[in-house]
Image 1: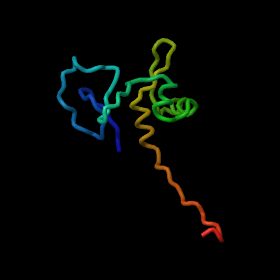
Image 2: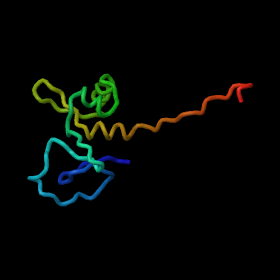
Image 3: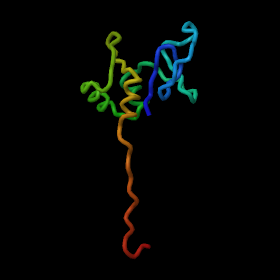
Length: 106
């Protein structure tokens, strides 16, 4: 599933057509997911960690590798949340195995 935000849209979703909206009514700092959760366009490293579940170290590694994008505002580094969401969506699914049954504990 690809998460995208296009100019003129107010929601993140899987490759949806942008709806016609009055840009003056939109908040340029936050986006609203289809389930009503408000997500910022940019966030600090710590906040990005909270939003994605990635560690701060992993965020810095992915920034250095060019897989996440960030901007500077004064001394603050702000991660572009869309790049973090795209990165998390690109990760392989987790796989789990059933625990082995020990002989005699059937």
